[in-house]
Image (cartoon, rainbow, N blue to C red; front, side, top):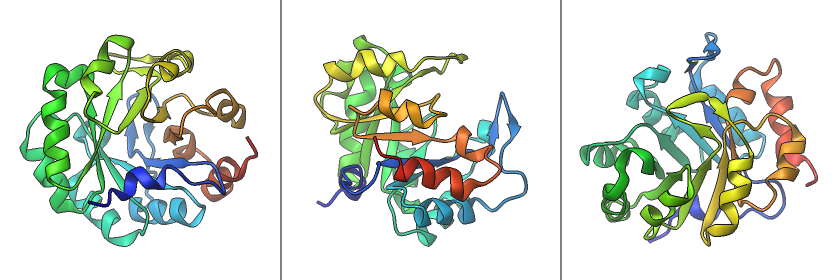
Length: 219
């Protein structure tokens, strides 16, 4: 089976940037500012992002209907992010047309491998989010891991050093996420396969220019 999301992270002619659409932030409030999430996804694709991430959680004002629209309108892989706890959400993600689904090890714990297998059965790329070293074992049957620099139980605690510490211990495709705001951060995280950027893009006054600067930066 062809898992396009996994292969999209291996681009060679530019930086592998996953552009995230986050409609609301507990810290910044409204991030969508009347814009169309689908149009933002198109901008990400136009600017060379290797994939799109969309947060469907109601906490962030997301929904499955918009996810389905994004999947239909863009040609690059789409990752669904949410606080997945129920097996039926894997089916819903598949039905929406997404290519990948985030599984948070801090939430699923020892159920993570079961959800990884379920994603594979539905043709989805399971992306296991890891926060600390003890969670690495939960991603043993996954091919892609996301190293989250943010403590989801303490959102103000964001440190890029978390990725620096964890990445050498993981022999899988790695995504660095959270707290990436400067081109210099790409240099710091150059040993991961891709980075996911959400809030910094969403608050930018010139989305297209900002995204291109990260995609095209020489690292």
